[in-house]
Image 1: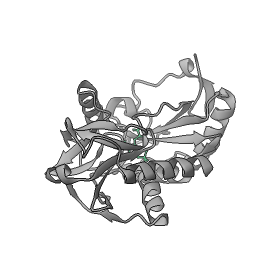
Image 2: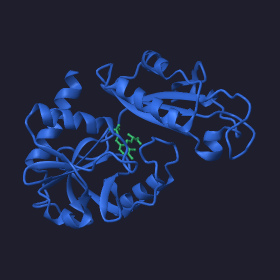
Image 3: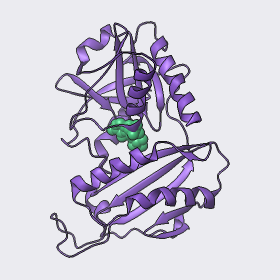
Amino acid sequence: MNPIVYFNGEFLPKDQVHVSPDDRGFLFGDGVYDVTLTYGGRFFRIGDHLERMKNGLRSLRIEGADVDALEGVGKELMKRNNLDCYSQALYLQVTRGVAKRTHHFPTTEVQPTVFASISPFNRKGDPENGSPIVTVPDVRWSRCDIKSVCLLPNCLATQRAKDLNGHEAVFVRDGSVQEGASSNFFAVYGGVVHTPPLTNYVLPGITRIVVLELCEQHGIPVRQVSILQQDLAETEEIFLAGTTSEVVPVTAVDGVPVRDGKPGPISRRISDLFVEYAHGE
Ligand code: PDD
C-alpha cells in the first residue's frame, strides 16, 4: 500500500517523499507534531490540536508554517485515500526545515518542512477490560508541554512497558506521577478524579481537556493536584486518556492490581461518556 500523503505543499504517494538529510527535524528533532482522529468523517477537536501545534511552533520560534491550512489538508487526505474505516488518524509534523548543520537556528530564511498523513486508527489499550501499566523514571527534558518530535525517552519508556506486557509507561519525577508516554494520567481517590496540573512536565492533552469537560458536565468531581507514586496503592481507580488510546481503565501498576484488577465504575463511565461524545460530535 502506498498512501497519498502531504509534503511541503504537494499531495503525493508516500514513497515519493524525500526528506533531506539536512532537515533539522532529522538532525536535531527540531520540530513538533500532532495526532488527531476522525470519527465518521469528522475531525475530533481539530481546532484544539492546531492551536497546540501553533503554541509549540511559537515556543520553538519556527515561523512560516500555515497551521490553519492543515485542516483542509486533512480533509483532502481523507478524500484522496478514501479509507474504508470509521476512525482515522491524521498525523501532522512541522520541522524548522532544511539548513546547514549548526546548533543555532539558521541565519538565512528557511521554509519549514510540513508533512501530513492519514491512516486507519488502531486504538492502543483495552477500554473494556482495562490494561496494565508500568512506572518509569521521568528522564525527559523540562519542556514536556511542547509536543516535540524528540520522543526518544517516550520510545524507551514504551518499549519498557511492552517488555513487561504493559499497555503504557507512566513517568514519575521526584516521586510524583506526571503522565504516560503518550497519554495523560488520572487516579480516583474518595470518588474524586485527580489528575496532575498542567506544568512544563505535562503535555496539555486534548483528550484530557475533554475528560475534564465531561466530568464537569456530568457532576463528577475533579481535582488537578500532584499524585504521589507512593499513594497509588490507595487509589480506587486509575485511567489514562489520549488520542491514540481514548480513555483506558488501568488494571495494574507494576504488576500490582488496582483494587480488584477490573475497570472501576468511574473509569468506565468516563470511557463511555467519551465514546458517546466523540462519536456524536
Ligand atoms: N500522544 N502526553 C503525551 C506525552 C503524549 O504524547 C500524548 C499524546 C498525550 C495525550 O494528548 P492528546 O490527548 O492530545 O492526544 C499526553 C500522541 C497521541 C502520540 O504521541 O501519538
